[in-house]
Amino acid sequence: RLHHVLVRIDDVGRAAALLSRLCVGGVYSTIFLYSAELFPTSIRSSSVGVCSVLSRFGTMLVPFLSPTSLPPASSALRSSCTLATKAFASLMVSSAAVALLALPETKGTALPACLAEL
Image (cartoon, rainbow, N blue to C red; front, side):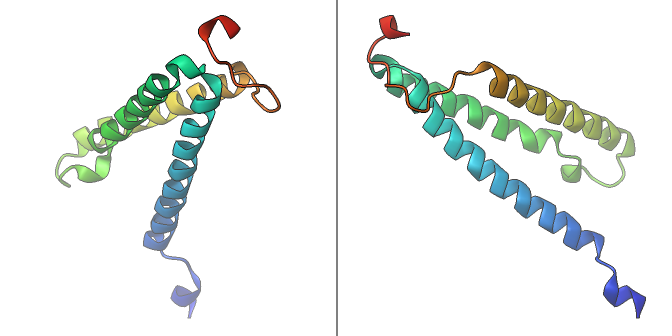
């Protein structure tokens, strides 16, 4: 039977959600490790805290941009939330690309002890 062979859409969505959770976990680990290497010792703890707050801010925005949290009758609002989700995702991808190209490499370098060493 053909319906046993085809993958259901729910399974694909569930797999995509699990993959995105895996990627988010990796990103949070990278934020904490890289920000600890990037900032000097004198301001390292407050800088890691600021990076943590900014990363959590994006996490707080996601439920407001999710079209799945809307009632089924609001199709116009659902389409505008889908547009907002796409805009937010494109902003995150472009900021990740800028960060990848603009931030310095820290492999093999000594950690700075004060702001004057930057």
